[in-house]
Length: 504
Image (cartoon, rainbow, N blue to C red; front, side, top):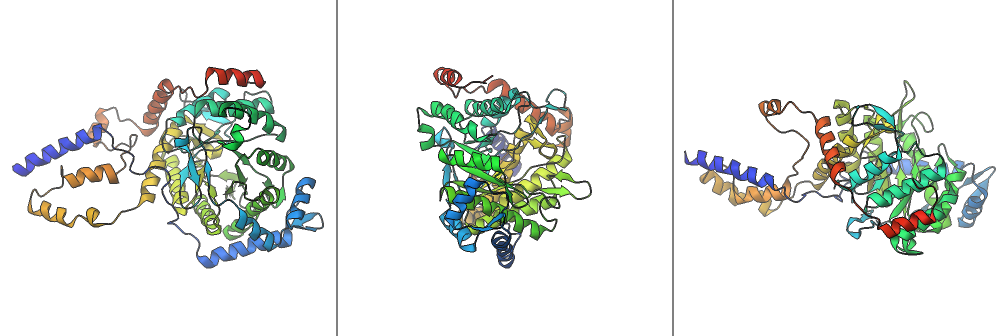
């Protein structure tokens, strides 16, 4: 009877402990790299093929300005293409920034990119939003972007925010770029990322960032925005507009994420090894370009393998091949010692359903275990990147936390083995409920989800048999109803609106 009473007391103690959630035992920045889909020989073969492609085939459609800078750096003209000798590529790798800080406007939210640290963040350019009222998709709006920005601002396991949707209600490219950036700096103090449609937009938008940062030149001294640019168009050629944007971003000291997004069987080989070789070569071509313009400029080596369903030609964001290839990409980038960017959670599901959960969980965990320093698309994206969802942001935040817990692993030492605690319990109460060791482990070793249902079936039924989509919707609505951050002062807001046209 005494044991039964102690068990009851242990349960009550556990309930009380849960009422006051413990500190996050697995915060962002856990170490990845445990999953290695490629062995050393395979890595060297893929890298060797990438070098061969750059030296023997090279890059096409090279803009004149870039061509001149590449030749000065050691590239070679070969007909209408420019080739990169191995020495030039290896020099670019050697001089590349291996780690750097992605600043938040709140320095406590800054993150160190590179090494083994893993951070989940957002991305995407969804043209549709999953409406929380109807449960159906509709065109994304600027108001959606503002709401997504402040929603993720309250979610701990999303470490930086890149616009996840395109405001389709903007009348032109300038209006899109200026209102997108304004939404980001107004709604969060995390590091943010954006895209510049045209090079001519960069300088005036930096004026906005200077106003936010405290004066002329202040932003460039401590940049809290990174630019997402795709200067290479698969297969193996440059895109003139994106190259122009890159020059302007580097001139303003904006960190860049140079994204390669080849698609298997379409713009890259269908064979996985051939795909990895070409995609690596293309991302290295971006690195050489940055090196030729400004050696060591902060660049996220964003080699994103994309897969298409070869039966239909449709983009497939949630397949096993996506999980495998992005993990392999992270492994290759880390082998080169470069800050890696990969993609995950690009589910093909339209609803928040079983397909959604399987594809999100599989691809997020693989990318994290593969060691991707920055894992893009890992919050809010649905429908093969065509859609964004408020509920998905909330669910993905919890999925990211679970992945961080896996990365943290098992700490083995005298305290955690607990030989004496086991002996005392076996010879004493006969259970570990309520023991000091158990309380310490609750605080230290366990992540407790807030959305996942762990109730008994009868309790779940008595509560109305709630499902995850509904719980996530309720939490998203609660955050949106209560979290209204004011990250721009009235004076800053007035100055921005006085300086820049096109703001809604």
